[in-house]
Image 1: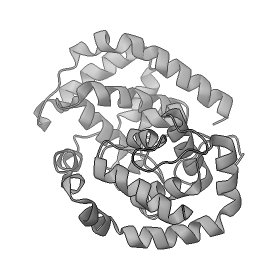
Image 2: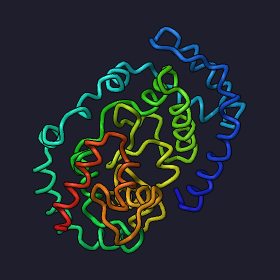
Image 3: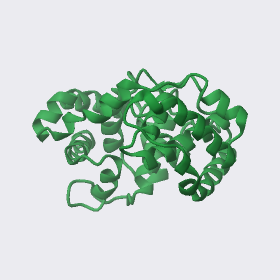
Image 4: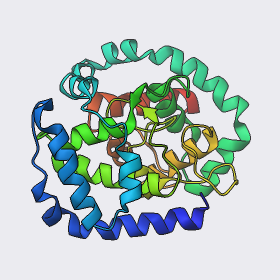
Length: 273
């Protein structure tokens, strides 16, 4: 996908959302699988009315099913309630720091380029990369469109994930997201686990090939992550520990305070600051 096309798609998707709240009222949410197929049929009608092509909808929903592992994951995020020390142990913080230092050294030119472009140093990017997917070693095994559709149907966060589903459909239309793609339980994509809307908003070409590939290109994934942090208030040269100016950008990454603290701590250990 050429970046000019990608950015145009982002603009088009953002504009389409203005019509979403009124149009989405016909698709009724549910708290179990019984109404899911009816919801899909209603949603497809509404999405078509909002300008999504029938061919995209048919391709995107061809293999979509109610995803029980997604619901289980959404209801059971217990690790975010752990103490900092317990969370670091569970997430393998010491290993991420050790491997992260090696990753920084072996990708020196890439991280220098990203910092020049976005103002974000290597440490917090590597912390996110390591905690999210073990540096790209495991990106999830759940059907992405089923995961996002299930959460859009589920009554707990319907509006938020309906937005994510529209973004996912935009990515399918642009040829970025395969209807068969797999990722994390909430529909996160790629090496740093972007939700679809964040791919549309912050996806950045880090390797210069004119495309954004969050799965196959570590350069794209890391540049996109830096762009996300910049978009959430990151200021070049400012500190990123709790109480410092850039910690607010880290807070934008994940709502759990223990996760935010882990990013700041691991990043600091990697950056040596």
